[in-house]
Length: 414
Image (cartoon, rainbow, N blue to C red; front, side, top):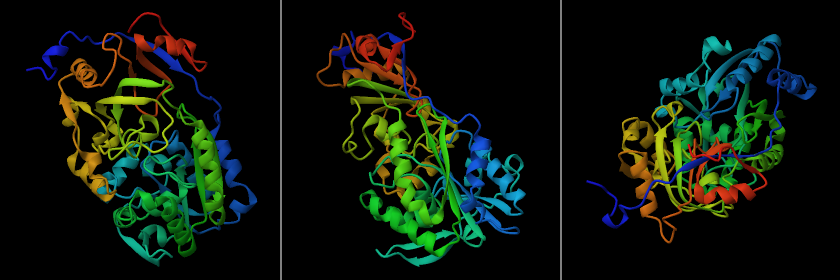
């Protein structure tokens, strides 16, 4: 039995055309040399002494060449006589257990054999006392017991709040390094408090743990490295806002004004903390994203879950429809742990399931309000990170043709 209303049976799936969105293309071509240049700066080199046990913090976000970045940092530290090891700093991700978090790292190519450093993964924490607002801060115990802590992370806009510091080194030192326990404590305050709470908690960690410096990474819209910056711990809170501003300016976007239906091929935690980035779609599982400057999107259909998400479908609640075949790939336990810990159970709610792409498109369009059903505005993207080459329906071709940062790749439908 069809879920499409009888009156809509004449509705047809529109033909789709290949369009390329153009973004800035500056990137680092030799990431190893860039890292060596940064780490050999005198103020950074002076922080590492022979014999030091150094905890390198690695998270659960997809970062271009992350395994090579970590391996290079490990190599440099060994040259200096230090003893580096890897600590997963990803809060409740990876099923909130040690094996799951090590599996997430392995999915990014970060294994003991690949980066030539041991991985110490557990969920035990060390209490650091209360911050000024009363938050009891804790960090991973193995990292705390090290002689030096170095977070390695990407700086980018957050999916659920705005502030001068969002996702980056400060978030990794607090939510990530706090493991399941610390992550839960922070999220109990709600995202509304994060703009002030994360910098406060990060300052507390820096003051009470042996944070040496951070390796900050900023990427361009094509998921390539734009810059790497070694930031002394004493300047992380000072420098991260500028890095965030740069990252925000380099973010990709969907450059149309009105979209009836957005089709997303895959979502996942490796793509965005919210599965699909609200900075791209304009919506979270709870509400529309405040001050969103992108397109007005009526309906969202999701086709699949990224393998690198390890079954975590957190964020699927922001969609209106999903393919039924996707449901079998969801690890409900991993999803529910992440959603509950982050204080957003709405993110794990399962939307309407459709049997295939065609039914999903027709169901999405038939549930839109006030659209031209003979010329629907449909956009299909691989995910919210990959927005260069996309598919659009015929109704959007003229807008693409006139846009200075778009080009039509083929006049024939795919």
